[in-house]
Length: 226
Image (cartoon, rainbow, N blue to C red; front, side):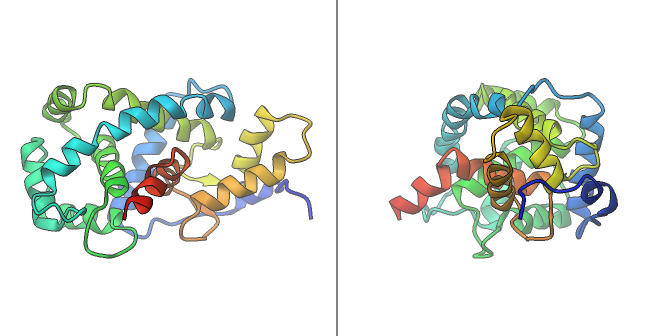
């Protein structure tokens, strides 16, 4: 039972987006992948954890501002107001799609870690980002750089630039960092399992973002406070 997955696994597996939003996310990541990644190893991603953690936690005040009833979650009406204040224009259908995609535990409310994923996906997909960039720079000056780092990290893992990360790609990324170490395969599989929320064997950018909030400890601390 080795930890390394054969190369044929990533080339043969084809993942079909389940929703319009996922299709847009995959398309956006494929486009970004053509620009390449500045990341050199999985360790270079890990080294950025503290700075990313600090930047994401700075979103807490913004989250609380939009959580008007202070119940620890943003509902659909509060999310619509949030988009309006940030100068983001989406159709009613698109807003619902964003909400459903980020409400990963399906409790009809966007928690703080889900809010972070929501903002990053909006940042990735918004065609006319001028207004959004201005608002983000004013409210959260370091957030754009953090989102770009997260996109860059995913592109590094997505070796074949198809908009998904497969098990073999994760193994390859870990092996580039821990060359010669027997545990590298097990580490890769553990990290991949943490990312593959729907257990379909492929990780999209949304799943990667949720895993990342967990890796830097945001969702754990949130659960501990409840």
